[in-house]
Picture (tube, rainbow, N blue to C red):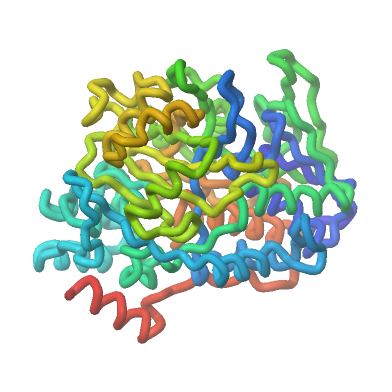
Length: 530
């Protein structure tokens, strides 16, 4: 029986999944905004979609990750954003602004891959041989139940991992060879339409600013105007379930500033949607003279909540499959805040990429597997005049660098900048860049956790069978055919939960299937088999 529109709904976690759920509750289910409450342990909403002032002594700006959107696959996200007005013009939706920005600054990377001698490679040459293509075909043909918990490198020879295709795919989506072969297959199917433009990333869509300023802030303003309340600094430490097989959620246990802060008792008509786990849990920051800590003891509570919940029923998932091996799931990013255009202009001269159009460039032979993006400027709404930002990350920070003989994990921001400058080769301007650049490094223990090897039962359904008044949201739920670590996945989980429990008489947009389009299928096959 659908929920009452007078139900109170508690959303645990203030990431995009909960914010989207709040919007769907108000927009599509007719729930009064004042009946919707978001509980977030951080002082800001948005979860992994961030863009803030760096919380370090050096200052500057920082984003932890770069979340790229895509036109065909992100159907639930576009459904949400087409009704959210921008901050600058209430007559323009966030969706319209992203479309306009894509036309104004179309993505077309001219330096997607850089070789060890600093020359720009022809990334359109994917490097796949007949054996690689056969292995790809075999993986795509296998049912997920037969793939099981096997790794990507269980299906391919070493040659595949030396190709341009793998270099671009892994750095675009942050895959590792030990990640789930099922997730790799899902990504191949979801983004098959990108095969023939993988080397240019011309299918990428971005907001005018970083993901917080472009998406989260407008969405939160829209929710606040409709009465939705967000309680910051509140951690949900545990949840009590009742009834046969734990099918009803009855109580939430709260903590604030490390101390117990009471409980929320759920009435007969009340609901709770809980975000499970977090890619950015226990993030630590460093600056020019400090090294970000690699936190291993689950301090912020995101994973501990799921671990506690999972004890209630076998279909509530197995969080250890995703958070149990930090050495496999961690990676580090960095944001540069520079005074003056010196570095941006030199990169543009070297690559031909205007800021905001080049997307991602990767030094494929670098030991850290270093990648750099130069976004359109300003990238932050409050960015100072004559200040510019760049973002980068590395997938292999546990080994010594090529120019700095230390693991990235042990490097200060100044040393990370030295490694980057070494790969750029701009020796004549290196000292001036150092003097005019503030760098914020970001260590994320669980950034790669969604891709970890898993079985079908390791992630719970958004709405477990028989669940009366609760649902699970985010990157660690099971959505058939969905691709984790995307904003689309989180928003789809929110739409699924709201539409199910509140009987919304609207169709959830079906997932895009590129291979069902003959032209897309032909183009992809032509690219991969060439």
